[in-house]
Length: 232
Image 1 (cartoon, rainbow, N blue to C red):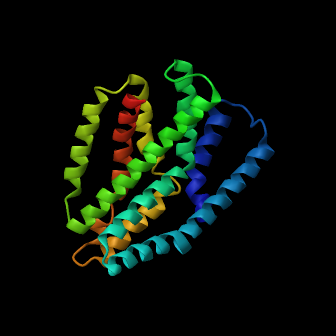
Image 2: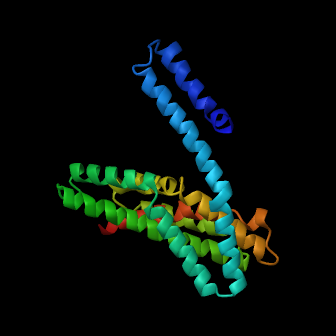
Image 3: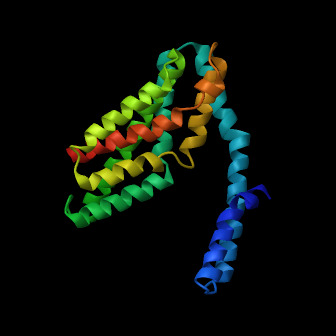
C-alpha cells in the first residue's frame, strides 16, 4: 500500500494525459497493468530490503571501522564502496552505452562495437573512480569536521573552469553523469556510510555531518568526466 501510494501521482499523470489530453485508449492495457503491478511489488520489496539490510549493514560497517581505529582502512573501504556501487549502477550503464553510440555517430570515436564498448567502459570506470574519490573526501570531512559548503563551492568552481576547455560533445554527458551515479544502488549505501560514521564518531551530529556524501558523489563525476572528454 505504501508503494502504491508513492506511485499514485505518476499513475494519475499518465492516466490524465493519455485519456483526457490525448483521448486515446492504452494500446496494451493488460501489459501495462502487469507492469504496474511488477513496479509496485518491486518498489515495496526494494524499500523493505533497504530497511532490513542495506542501511543497517552500512552503518554497522562504518562503525566497525571507526572502532578499529584505522583511518587507512576506513578510507579504503569508502573508495571501494563508491567504486563498486557505481560500476554496478544500471542508470550509469545505460547512459555510458548511449554516450558511446552517439560519440561514434558524431565521429568522436571510431565506428564499431569494440570502440564503443571501450569508450563506454572507460566512461563507467572514470565515474566509478570519481565517486570513490568523492567518498574519501566526504569521510575526511566527517572525520575532520570540515564545512560542507566550502567543498561544494570549490568543486563547482572547478567544474565551471573545466567546462570552458572540455569538448562541447562531452559537457552534457558529464553533467548527466552526476545524476545517474546517485541512483538505486549507490544512494542507500552512501547514506548509511555517512550516518554510521557521524553516529559513532564523538562530537559529530548525524543530522549535520551524516548527510552530504551524496552531494559529493554527484559533484565529482562531472569534473572527472569533463577531464575524460578532454583526454579521450
